[in-house]
Length: 217
Image (cartoon, rainbow, N blue to C red; front, top):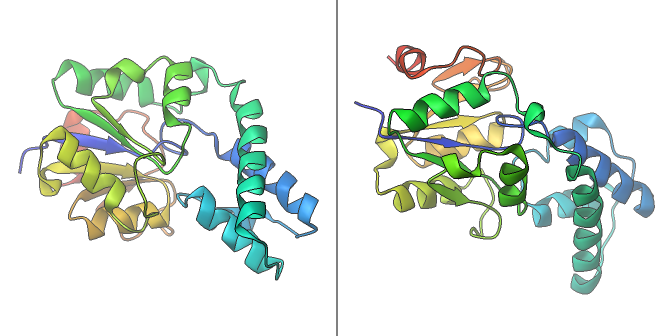
């Protein structure tokens, strides 16, 4: 089947802001007296801010009021945005700008499917916002990956069927979301981790429309 659109996760696929999330969550966990490792941070990838905080509270055996949780999420986001101010176009991951331009010039719609509530800000800082036909982010969805809501909404806004779109994801939860929604999926990262994707590449270096089609044959 021809590829009618591409949907991208943001963190770890287009740009590495994961390090900013890690620093902000680590800072928050420290303030709560909860140990927080890079391995635990992996479990937060592709997960909403609400669910990420719940995981940290569970690890620390903490029970907090809804008001306090909102305060903590806002604090984490404040710290994260301070770090995001450093983002520049040069921070795009290898192969990303070239592949996005090729898709755009070929008339293949590009969508973003991210749990981040700051996706538009980051795409703007990267200078690629104009290449995206739709942005479905944490302000538009209620369910976190692995629920496929974010990608299904993206496909709906693009007016295409899930089966004719390709999702690019770096997280297990994102791959599961793509599969649950009926999308084809190319994982970006470690094949051992993203084994349920249709194909896996280390990054988007050398990615092209023809290469994408070859991977999905």
